[in-house]
Length: 221
Picture 1 (cartoon, helix red, strand yellow):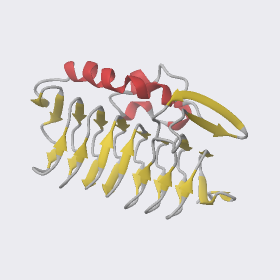
Picture 2 (cartoon, rainbow, N blue to C red):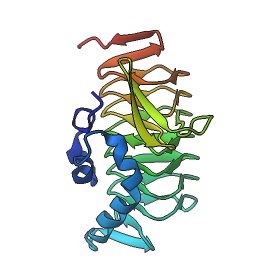
Picture 3 (cartoon, helix red, strand yellow):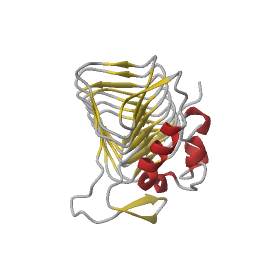
């Protein structure tokens, strides 16, 4: 479940071709800046405005006057960047995304339909198609001892070589309000994390995370 192809619908982001080159998605984090620059230079001028150097905004995106967007960045069609949002650079925001009030995003890819609408922090992370962070939910991207982040899954420890690495969140995952995804967390497709959770390691797809010792399979409807 850690592989890029198992976590994401790669046709739901402008970065799909680049992500497909990486077996594990966190390896794209160091390349996001260059990926955005390459994609941005090829965007159709009839659809996108380069509102400042290396900041491309679709003509049908909605940007609040109080939002701040640093380069490089791409804001796709139908995206809504609300009051006080802080786009710190090296960010790709997909179609119909919502980046809400006082939300901060840096060095991250948001697939189409992602919602981070209220007081969220998304750093050095990848959020899959229609993933949603509840109010106050954050990705913690640096360990307290500043050592490199490892991904843990089924008792295995996978070294990433990254000092800054937040979370990988699969398609349609729901993260509850005021939850913290600790560095190197991976949330599988269609999974749910309860509010006020502190999550480490891996949550498999189609799961409900209630607590570290209580992760249950979602019931089919």
